[in-house]
Image 1 (cartoon, rainbow, N blue to C red):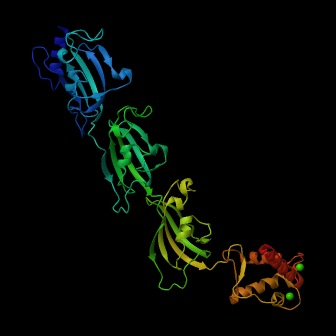
Image 2 (cartoon, rainbow, N blue to C red):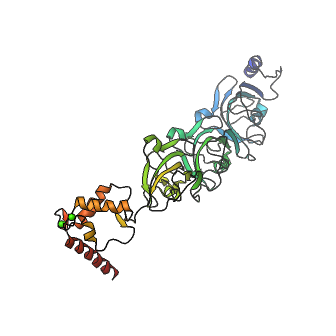
Image 3 (spheres, helix red, strand yellow):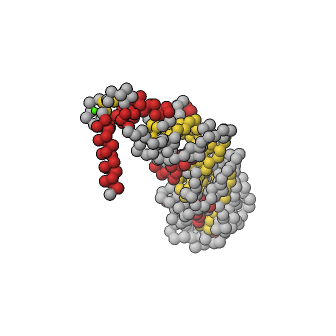
Length: 453
Ligand SMILES: [Ca+2]
Ligand SMILES: [Ca+2]
């Protein structure tokens, strides 16, 4: 009597109830909360995960997955659930809530279930659907936004950096790179990621945002992950691609502007002045010499700048502009640098302003032809048999001006000359005399001979 009374009550309040005066023939479904968006409905053969409260028609609870803290997970329509629920969850959307009233013959019949469910009992399940998937499912990708130009797409074996938000199919978040304030950095297509991610990231371009939906058998399968990803969970990632390169990449150089006249191109050892504008692949800047309003000055090919830059700075004319892309293994590598994250690809716009021929490594001054022989009389400009620093400085400056000698560029000339002078002024009395110079020359040649032996 009690159950019939309850059914009548349901007939009045339920919206989809097909009322009949007799005992309940089939399940009665009340879809009391349907999400606005429902991309997929439960069909026979699907796997579902749902939470439920099971009550009798008087409202007394006999079972609750909520109270156990573990949703039910199983396949629909193949007799693995009680028949009433196999029917009751058909057509359900994720996040839908419905009340399924099951007559005894579609539940535990005239036998009941142990001490819990008496014979001939109508059961009411209040169900919320958390997940649907099927063994036929594939990784689904959908591009949400994409830059107009896309020079390069993610390929297997590329190293990529991306941001992501990870949610379960019912929109519950489980992980986000944004909250950690750092990109996720990895090789793609090499088995470092879950299978579905390795697949779903392929073909993205830098700046693209993409949704990737991964069925559990291409994600964490039955084992789940920690406390955040349940067993057999479909995963939804919203990915923003930040950076990509391949470890086989060399630098890429695009010449933008070459002056009409170019008498000499930069070579290793040259001392140059240049401007640069440094950006990441997503276009954000990390460093620019223009803003500092002073050029960057360096020797080329001697390891004073990152490897890729040392290479990119060779073969330039004064006034030439080029763009160079430096992969991280030729840039700041996995350690990054100030303002440069780990494994970042760097873009530089370069403009060469000046170049000076260098001197061999370790030298401060070189003769461009034969040196004067004997040297001392040439140095002693006023012929008083003594060469103080002023006279020595004048002598060196004459060589530089006449092009018979060159000082190491990029350094304070006065400082270099003083060092050279001190090196010859053996007794440190502030002047060089013939014997001192001779002694030094002999000593040097002795040393050279000794080293030859
Ligand atoms: Ca003198
Ligand atoms: Ca002296």
